[in-house]
Length: 347
Ligand SMILES: CNc1ncnc2c1ncn2[C@@H]1O[C@H](COP(=O)(O)O)[C@@H](O)[C@H]1O
Ligand SMILES: [Zn+2]
Image 1: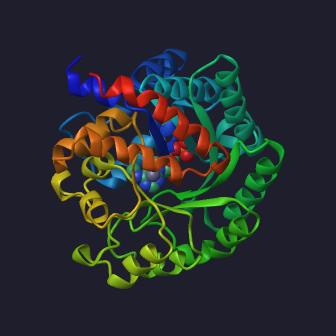
Image 2 (image 1 turned 120 degrees about the vertical axis):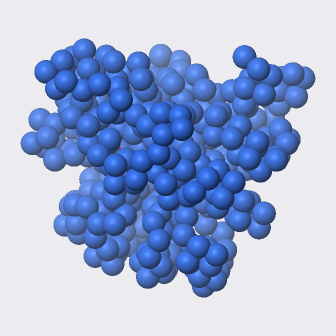
Image 3 (image 1 turned 135 degrees about the vertical axis):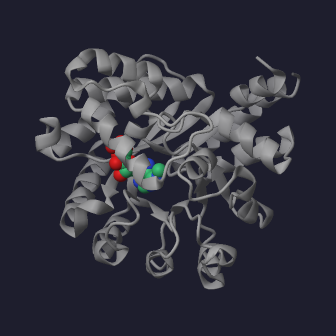
């Protein structure tokens, strides 16, 4: 392994934006395919390799293929445990996973059981001594509308209260070209009021300025992507001001945006805009399986693209601790970072 690779792998990291089914690795896909040969799914259908580009719409098709492969309780348990172990092996010390409980008829289990299964995976990894803290965000898929969103919020609230703090929040995701955030506002507001933290995908595609304006008024606790918020790309100063006023951290996923073609190249990524402003910006993977990446690679890409030093990247990873939805763990994580620092900078 090259020295730079080793540095980014050993760098302790925080992952805040990872969709469970988008994070399924090649080796887990192989196990799933072996369980379901009749589906005739090949790996080319579940991932977008280096140098390949897809439209965002095609990315959602890929996620649908993965959903076909991950459709029983055993699958979900295996996938969640594999994903957690892989993040841990990549040097992630704190992970916030998010996933959408699917309709009972597509998985044979209730949405409640779906969430319980992911929680079980988190608990099993903890008992096995995997060196990572994991928290969970229940995801609302915007394509399913207001009523399902409200049900999901209730489910998330129940789990927040019954899991001793493992469920910390709610994610809003799904195809950004479908539906309007306005309809989901009551559900999101309710989530916020009952103490769930909110991470919302905002302005992932152009022409969502109105929706973003509305959703930023809630306000969310973190923003996923925010690709088109700033004026240079069709957003507006008023959107930027809102984000700045609340100091709302952004979850930035370089490879996801480049492969999904909402950003034309790494050097054009809006990471630079926010980072230069000193705004809290957290590098994340989004869907490490689909986009064939991992968090160390994303850190390394940001460093090489924007000419940042290892020291800069250290600071970026350390600051991400303050953006987690687990305030009870932040002090302990800072301590861990301080303990690990000497070994890293001796390389
Ligand atoms: C690429 N950009 C993206 N934009 C918006 N939503 C995305 C996404 N990538 C993934 N998801 C959301 O995560 C689900 C898959 O994981 P789970 O089944 O929930 O674990 C997708 O169906 C979509 O709702
Ligand atoms: Zn996402």
